[in-house]
Every structure is written in structure tokens, then in C-alpha cells.
Length: 276
Image 1 (cartoon, rainbow, N blue to C red):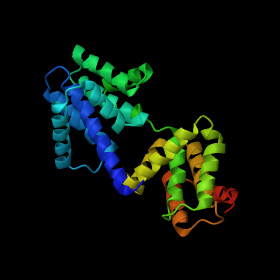
Image 2 (cartoon, rainbow, N blue to C red):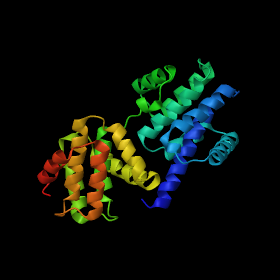
Image 3 (cartoon, rainbow, N blue to C red):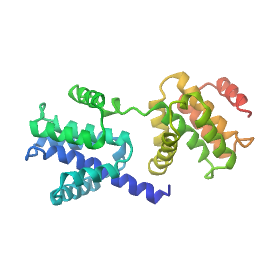
């Protein structure tokens, strides 16, 4: 996905997230100061809005509020949210942000609860997911606890980062990536469509957020030594798919080693096992 398209998708996603929060805020006909404070706090803590200036955020809120004020059909609004939030994680995030606003005054009104049920149905959020999100909100926790990245998604991203390290995806690398997704036991429960979605999301995230931020996400998501070794093994398999890692790919592997805290002798064994 070209950078311009990725940035456009990011803007559309963030606008949809803001609109969902505003829907919850105006559900009972009034917006409390606490709801506004909650909206801003939740936005600031989310990585999706990282790099958004206060001026840009104000403009986004004003534009979203204007769009909602001009809407005449709630179902059309919900359909628009679905189109701008195509993946389930972002839909869960939208519901969580809306719920955080609705419960900002400690107790949601009947109108707010009714709207949350409508949003839940429109975005396909399960009852178990709703219960988990509400529990975290009531405890004052972060939505990240309910929106943890699937391990398969993170493993796929590691391979994408290596594939894109030198600015081009070689045929051997593409073949190794596809073969890993198809054959590796860690992806056995992942459908081809979902695997392709993981790859697309990783490419878009790299384009919009940059490598340093994505390495942070990997470090936070892959927390055990076993997971990090697995991720590095997949990365080195891609890097050496065409025989020898390029200088850019080798630098990326070194960054992954530092990010994951892997010892030199351990990395040497993994590199040797990949045919380096």
C-alpha cells in the first residue's frame, strides 16, 4: 500500500474512532465535562493517534461533530463506521472508546447503554468481548489489555519488516514468507485470508508509524523468551531466503536482537539453523 493510501486510511480510521466516542457522548442529549475529558484522555493514550497535534485533534473532533450533526440516519452512520473500520481489532477499539465515554460518569444512562448495544451489534462485538472491555474500563485500566495483538499477527509483522528492510521484496523472500505462513504450526489456525490481512496491516503500520514504533509494539507484544526466539527465527529465515542477508536485512536482524534481548551465541545458533 503506497504511503499516501496508508495515511488516508489512518485518517479515516481515526475519524471513525472519534465519531464513535462522540456518539456515546451525545447519546443522552447532553455532554458532560467528564465525558469530554475522558474522550481526550483515551485518545491521547492510544498509539493510533500518536503524532497528532492538539490543533489536528481539535479539528478532527470538530469535523466529526459536524458530520454527526448533519446525519439523519443512525444506520447510515454505523455503516460508515464499518467501512472505515474494516478489521475487528479497530472495531473493538471503537466500541471500547465509546464505552469509556459512556461510563465516564461512573454509571451509563439507559440511552447510553442502548447506544452501546447498537454499536456492539453493528460492529460485530461478541458478548465476551464486551464483558472484558467493560470490566477493564470499570477498573480504570487501559484498553490495550483487551486489544492485545494476536501472536500470529506479530510473527507475520517480523517477517514483513525483514522483507522490507532493503526497500524491495525479493521473489525468494516472498516465497519464504508465504511458505512460513502456510506451513509453520504457529499459523495453523489462521486462514489464508486472515494471514494476508496480517501482512497488509503490517505493511500499512510500517508505512504510517515507522520502524522504531513498530519495534516497540513487537517488544510489548512478544513478552516471553520463547516468543522472541520464535520471532527471530522467522525473521532470519526470511533474511537468508535468497542465500545471504543483505546489509540492510542484517541491520534489521541486529535491531531485532537488541529489541528482544537475545544473546550473541543464541543468535548465532539461530542464524546457522537458517542457513546463514
